[in-house]
Amino acid sequence: MSEELMTRLNDDGYKNWIKASQCLKLLQRALHPFASSRMSSFHQELLHHHGPLRRPCEAKCRARGNTLPALCRTCHEWQTVILTHHRQGDSAIVNWGNCYPPRWRRNFWEVAKAYMPRGQSDVSFACQCDTPALLNLINFCDCFHSVDLKCVSELIRFRNKLMHSLELSVSDDWMEQYWKSLKKIMQDLSPEGAAVEREIQQMLSVNLSICVLDDKPLPIVHQGPSVSDTDSPGRINGQVISYWEERLLQERLQEFLQAASDGDGDDAAKTQAVVQLKRLQVFLQDNRDLSKRFSAELQDISSVLAANQGDKDEECVLA
Ligand SMILES: [Zn+2]
Image 1 (tube, helix red, strand yellow):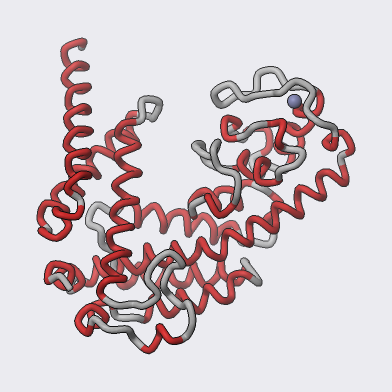
Image 2: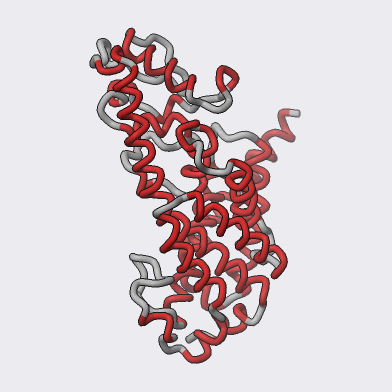
C-alpha cells in the first residue's frame, strides 16, 4: 500500500472526511428503497383520489427550459397536484425541466423529479439519484411527513460541508454531531434504515490507518456485506480505502469541473468551483500517487481554469 495514503490517513481530519463521505454513500442505500416505496404509494393515492390524472396526456406536453408553457388538461391537473403537495406551495421554484409530463401518469419517479434539484431529466429510477437529490425530494414533497425535516436540513448542511470543505478535513466534534444526525434520520427511514444504521456505526468506529497498516481484512468483513459498497471489493483493507478515496475525490472533481464549465450556472457557484478546483489541483499534485492516478483529470482542471481565466480577462477588456 502506498506510503502516501498512509501519510494522508495519519491526518485525523482527512480520515474523518473519508469516513463521513463514505457514510453518505451508505445513507444512499437506505434512501433509495425508502424514497422509491413512498413515492410509489403516493402516486397510487394521487391516481385514486384524482380521476382526471388517470387520463393520458393529450398533446405530448414538454417542458421548455424550466417552465411548462402550454399544457393539456391532464398535465395541467398533474402540475396543480404536484404544487399542492409541494411544501413551499405556490412560491415553490420547481425544476419542471426534470420532468416529461406524459410519463406522470404511469411513472411515479417522473413525479418525484419535480421535487428535486435540476439535472434529473435523464433519471428514471431512485437508484440513479444521489443523496442530495433524495434529501431535497424528502424536504419538498409532503408525502414524506414521517421524516423529521429539521434532521433533513441538518444533513443537507453536513453534506455541503463535506463537499465544500476546502481542507478535505472535518473535526472529531463535527463527526459526533454528524453521527447523531445520521442516527436520527435512520430511525425515520424505517425499516430500510435499520441495517444501514449498523453499517454506518461500523464505518465510524473503524480505524482506517490500522486497516492500511495491516493491509489485511478486519474481522468486520466476515459479517456479511457490511461497510463495503456493493460495487467495491468486499473487504476493508488498504486497497478498498484507496478505492473509496479515489472515488470520493473523483466525484468532487467532476462536480466542480461541471460547475466551473456550466454556462447557465450562476457566477457565485462558478467562482466557488474555480476555488475548489485550484485547491484540488494543489492537493493532487502534492501527492505523488494521486497525481499519477489523476493525471488526465489534472489536465482537465488546467483547461477549465485556463478557460475561466480567459473569461475573466475578456470581462476586464469589455469593462
Ligand atoms: Zn399533456
